Length: 196
Image (cartoon, rainbow, N blue to C red; front, side, top):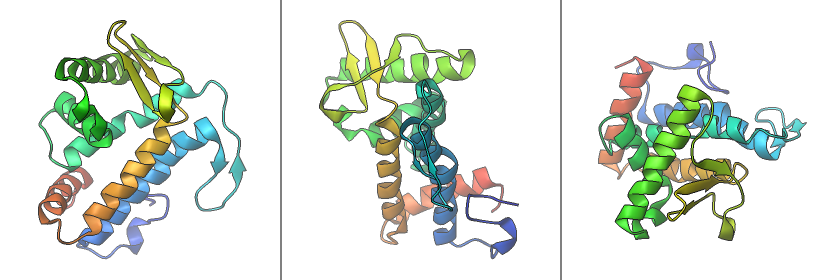
């Protein structure tokens, strides 16, 4: 059985090493989520066979549905918070550290809209509230207008930002000096993966 786009369960040695867990997580998240979202939005080469695919018109909200769960996953992996909303918000701030420079009220409003009106609205109602697709300035993936309380997300840029974050997170995890980070990740992985 495939457990990532490149891993078969029969090819694994149990118990899994930390590095194997990291590799499985990385390839599941990249190959089954973020790269798929990137292909939908931007086209490119499929993983594993280099077949070129075209982007799909009007796939922006499908891209958001694929991508938005990444924030909560990162919050959980890093043990940044407790609960879906808190993990989502913590993960979003980990992906977008520049939010730390935004005034607290604006940051709170942005994160509330990203969670409630994008993530929850898409998952529970298949549409957003106060969130639209567009072209934020300065090559940003998201932009928030606090006066209008509107959040603009670029579905072409967001998958690339998340893929870049995943690469950095993987590099941090592979560094054996990051003991606490690796411990949090392994605890999450073992609980989620069903093996201890």
